[in-house]
Length: 147
Image 1 (spheres, rainbow, N blue to C red):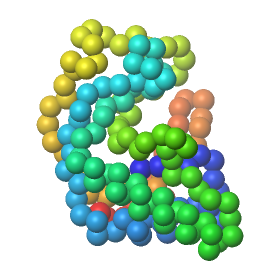
Image 2: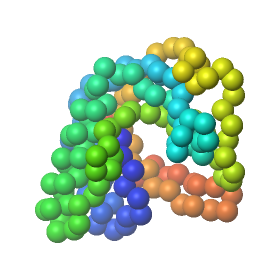
Image 3: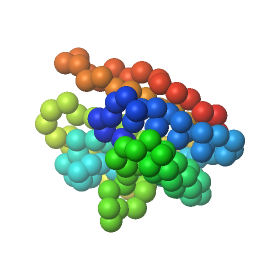
């Protein structure tokens, strides 16, 4: 739902409590809607799959952004940005792969023709902390809220 970057202490407390705004929203069924890449499809470092959910994750993102803003104001800390950056539109996606070094070459057929079949359901939202190590990132679950 959001990448908050490097935060600590009170900011983590605000982020964790902001998840309450998502509680009891209801399950969010979704399917994947094709592959893409950042910074571009042709020369990616991050491979993603788009998510088709009827716009429900956009609403969750909006609610989380509001809760983060209110929580930061009450805590007297700088705003926690729930992305996307100014001028960008929230786009629900799942990260499939990240390259440690170099740039990936996407396989044929073109990404637009790749299909990931099936449907799934989001049932919870989790705040993770990450610690970067030489072997890769280690993720720790800090708080969970059922949708």
